[in-house]
Image (tube, rainbow, N blue to C red):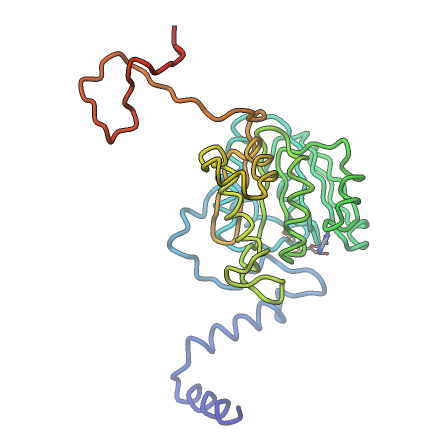
Length: 310
Ligand SMILES: C[S@@+](CC[C@H](N)C(=O)[O-])C[C@H]1O[C@@H](n2cnc3c(N)ncnc32)[C@H](O)[C@@H]1O
């Protein structure tokens, strides 16, 4: 260890590690230097190298976060673009919405959400940390409310959100895999039709210290991979669905419209109403001069189909 240290010091003295040294000194300056006074940070970005694959840094959400002067919020850079995309339909509708963030810490993201969504939106933060109850976050015409409790306790969630419905739910809480799944199973029902449920930091799915692991049963990523089967429930051969424990697959088939996997973020979209039957096919037009046996479009005289268009 000491040899490595001496070697590194020698390299620094020879000027060979200038870039790393500069990065390290910038980091120290950012954390302990002029920018750090008590508990007040001043928009610190720990890694200044924006990734080229992230499109544009000028989106409205990015701008709000860049200019944010309130309480701290802590996000990975790719999340901003993901959020911008996921939130877009709600911004287009331009109506106040109900949002729940689970895991708020200093509540900075609640303040960002308040600035981003239409005035009158109701923003609720849930955290296990009792001190969060004393956060002063409001302003700007929306109402921010804070609830204290454990998001991994189903009973608590049922009781606290008995009559609540949200358009957006964000889980940024413990990131312990089984907790995330418990919260999802309890709270997906609390989503309005057309709403979206977002889980941050899903990379902990691969971490042993968060009760995850690569392709480990019960990890968040594996759980949501299985929900892809729920999405396609009606296409699974009945002989198979008869054998497997499928109640939850069918349950989620009626409500899950889409599952998006991003880097470290999973977003699950709810249908605009319950789906109670398999989807139908729309076959439009009159002429089919080409018929092929290997094409599933083949219609013979016995095929019964409704006329969708008068
Ligand atoms: C990563 S921080 C949240 C950061 C915040 N969302 C932001 O954008 O800055 C995680 C928070 O989740 C809370 N938390 C952890 N376990 C929880 C649980 N079981 N129920 C509710 N909150 C929990 C912690 O107290 C902490 O405040």
